[in-house]
Image (cartoon, rainbow, N blue to C red; front, side):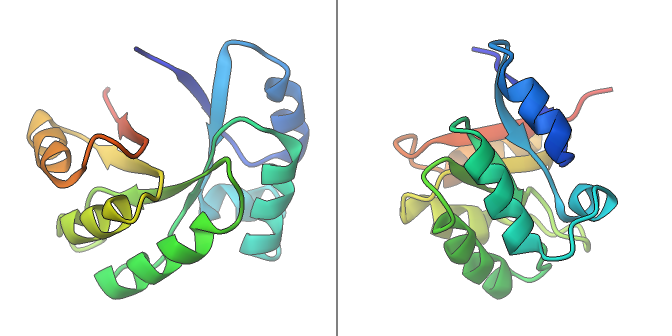
Length: 141
């Protein structure tokens, strides 16, 4: 089933699209938040999470497995509607399977992002337990 999520951080737009039934949730990242004027990532994320009951994906910004996992556990505590957004590969192109597996086995809802191929999708599906909610954001173009 396909669901539509808005990839935005602007508070006024989140309020506007929160009222649209076609929009099932929101996803954002540190760059979008900075562009929207955020000064503190956690505070700004909490503001978004308090606007909507719909799922909101907040991205880890570490690039190494240990810190991605640590950030994932922290972000998960921000709200019931939060999904921890994890890139499928870090900036060096290394698959983040260990991060995905560790967070997923601890029942942390994930949005695995920047997925560009069927091969990546297959590797992700091998790392998740199918019980905990997971969004796979496939980029096509």
